[in-house]
Length: 149
Image (cartoon, rainbow, N blue to C red):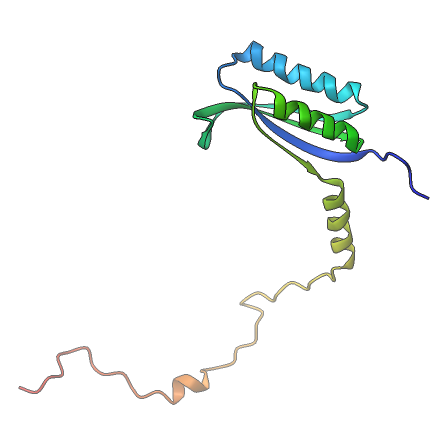
């Protein structure tokens, strides 16, 4: 039997338009923070990454204020926040990723992976002597000009 509305973990990054000053960007972030909490999310990390230059222009803008939320929420909450971000003119881009499955997968891989033995150091490796390939090669020519005169 499964729970009807599980709290899944999400990581969301969004870009606030550069026309907003610090206070304006903070107001936009507060709006979405309140929307998350009102819809049943618990925010675990709320981090402003500041104003940065974009790698490429987005809607003819080259800078934006980055913000990151790490939170647990039902899927309906995330869908509502994404819908509001699409409609908002203050948000350039956003990306929300469900990370609880990635964490579970990482733990499973770590549990099923056999530990590797460290490789022996170069000083610990037994000396094999000259290789067979070097003994069958012809001797090297002298470094002078070998053309006949």
